Image 1 (cartoon, rainbow, N blue to C red):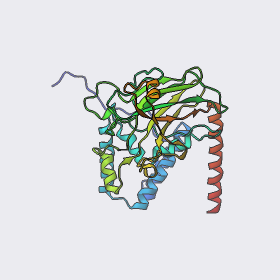
Image 2 (image 1 turned 90 degrees about the vertical axis):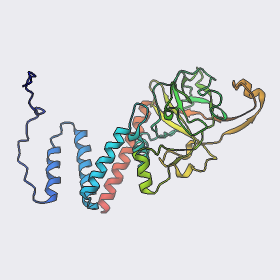
Image 3 (image 1 turned 45 degrees about the vertical axis):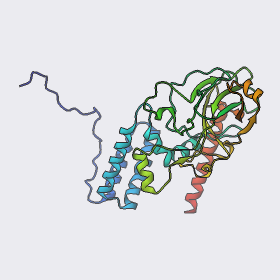
Image 4 (image 1 turned 180 degrees about the horizontal axis):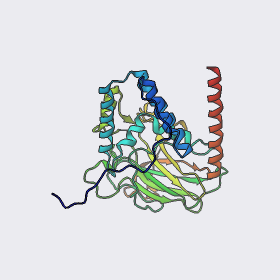
Length: 334
């Protein structure tokens, strides 16, 4: 016999409900029972979310007459999706992206007005270990792609500069890979962290992004094959901007000459974020921007406009009221 102390299974110390649930003899009683229990959820927002989730999930199961094998396949898919994640790879975010959920949640939570810059999806390749980059310096070493210079200003909606804003930026190399996709990654590459100057200006050297396929070696890749969907994203460069008192902006800029602009497999492109890259063929201009070999480069110029936290809250409240009115109207019609 082992000398280890006896351990017994214990409850979570929550008392059973004070009411009795009917033993189900019909499928709809199962749904009614779980909804009755969900009413006990202490937090009102949590209660609302889970009641809606259960309602629509059960409706989905009834509508599709889901089989046991299909449901077990879905559970296995979700399990493998989670197992594929690492600190540098976010398969679950990728799943959210390809189903359009990331784009929809972002759009609903980040409405803009007053000329503010629109958001785009974060994607699965953001990391927190980007190196600090001085004004005009490079986020990529030589040989990672064709030269590109990115410059602009961080502004308020009334055109005032926002100094010392933190700008995180990341992109693929010329092979269509992010640094996190290389097994021998030893340090961040094609990504950096910089700040706007006193006049709100920012500038840095980068490489021209290329279109690329999202990772196809995991469950999300299998899903796209099952659905008969391609896995290409248009070329783009990510930027995330934060400043005290301003609503955090996660966005990306998409060059206008890409064939995949209107068929982004994760639905991230917005019309206002499509940009033109200017061709600059001037050794002197290249030298001014720090390109060691001179010659030609692409120039991306874009002023980024941030909302204050107060402005963002007011706009979100207005959008929420609009959707409530629309929902009531649709219910009245039915």
